[in-house]
Length: 262
Image 1 (tube, helix red, strand yellow):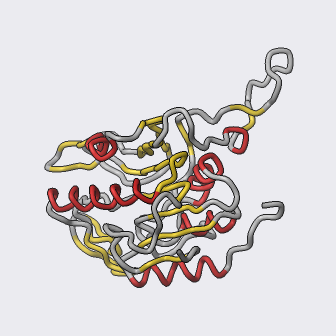
Image 2 (image 1 turned 90 degrees about the horizontal axis):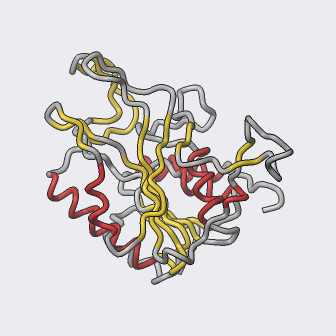
Image 3 (image 1 turned 135 degrees about the horizontal axis):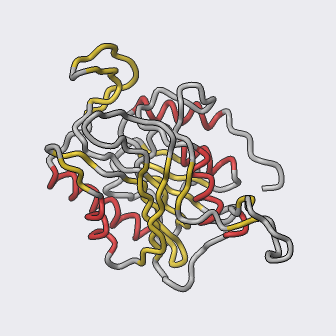
């Protein structure tokens, strides 16, 4: 099995990856919210066309069947002490918010350890409801008692640290993560329309894997998961069906420098 590869094909059949070889799966699947990414729009009209076009509009039954196939393969390649982290958000369908809790149907044979709230400070605007400023991250493990979790590697400074009460001034970051979305002035920003931040994936990779482990992303997009894995001394594998996104990921990976000491 080859390591450090991004395959330009569907992840519904991961024939290139061995059973129980991956320590961590982290991904953000297509949301299927009927948006043609790559266009700047206002009041339903295209004002500017830039970037790679991707129309996120599948039949809902077909969409969920695709995800079922992908996650079945993810579980096959996952080690017994491994975990799957899925970033997904609410969808607005026919004027009504639909939470993504239906995703749990794909993981009835795994254990949900945390439902993490990713809170960010900017995003889409609306005048008919409160502006959405969070997404979910579902964290599943195969074995509810034996799984990789490196809490010490992701602790954060405590604002109310008291040396008379606590042994350390570092604390558990909790299940609400305030991490900025990738803004246009971020150095890591690419032309991918739905890029998630390296800081978000770094916390997951550090907590859910060890140096030398294999990290896999079945919806690789601009390559953020692979970039973070390489920076942190892990191996990466992934799948992406859009050639332009694969090119973006490869260019990002070429610039990566592995952190000292890892």
